[in-house]
Length: 271
Image (cartoon, rainbow, N blue to C red):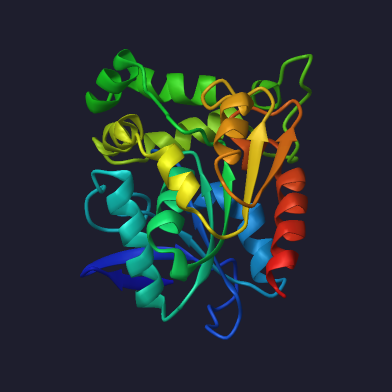
């Protein structure tokens, strides 16, 4: 589905069902240098089980126009503008990594528009190593290799201890490389800089009044589960689920477990 947000055309994957403002809505927000396709399983399932789904390509990403926004706060404000463009008063925000910071910031500053948040692979701070930042800004392949390599746990790497990819026919590491290689030059660098500069995670968490779910990978090297637990402790009403044998790419490394947690959490919101 195409929308126009702040004068810019935007692509939104709806999971194969039309968005119906009468149904409760879910907005899925991807991480740095990615797009809506990382939510393939979750978006389709939720759309066919009572939810209006908007899995967005953020500005400058995937099929959306415009340029990447320069800060987490700017992206959070953009998500609220997206709700306006779709004719939705409120929505559950589900975000991964950079998208999780966006959902958190939106819930803190636009609480009346956010029904609940589910935050995957998140921490109060997401500092980015200067070498990675420099490589991303320069558009070097090494930046993609670092993000994909560090971002996946043993399931993604197919190691003997972690087993193979949970989805038949899907290779997570090659798929991740292809996805990030398709991103326009400069986008990954802008996204990582936004994550690196965001320092209001704990303050935002303390301001969140809606229910929250934290889905964390036990073997996450980029946002360790310990840091995610610490952030969750700042939220008044939070649940924490730590997924074993899972790295930072929670929704693709453990798609069924993520879906189980989301459906359980969302059913609480229907009342």
